[in-house]
Length: 266
Image (tube, rainbow, N blue to C red):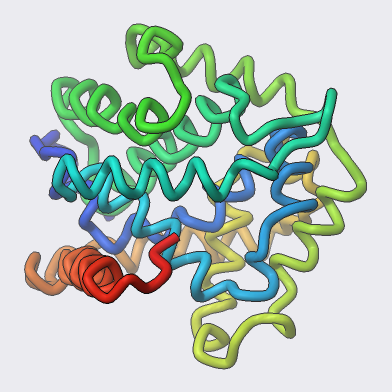
């Protein structure tokens, strides 16, 4: 059960909550459902061969952009741009496409607010607006122009709906998604969490997105999904804040060690 009163939160505390990882899978799937992004990932991503490392690099980017220093942000920005150089196909997609990058950043902002409010209850209007604006750095740090973002949250919701309406189904993207969600291909360390991650990945999606990606959803799935969101939030909120927000600090510490010893960061 979620709280009925609204509350305030800053972006650093918002992004540090590990409950937001319950939206990681659906965030990726929303990205893949946009054909240009989906084709680029399906044809270039190494996630299937190194899922743990790809999760680390993605979280490193997000946490550095929001919790890191200016120097760290610039270093990570350059590394991500370098990694994107070859992610292109003439007339089909480019990792430097500003509209596609806006969509990727938009999914992070949208799903973050969605999961946070399911866990803690509704944010105040001021907090929602502040988080929306501050999280724009996730796109602006790469090629997105600040003025490309919808001006208000209401405008953003219109952009979100219109973007979902532009999604196209593609066989190669569907095949990639099937492999991504195949539990047999996942590392043993992840397998105890895979049933929950699969449920959240599909359940957080709009039905239209599930249809685009060829994902199933049954009445039993809906019951399990609803039951989880009744049980999980009050338990999670009882965990001390320091423990809930510890993993991002550990990831940042590891990133700094990698930089210090000249190991690969991204």
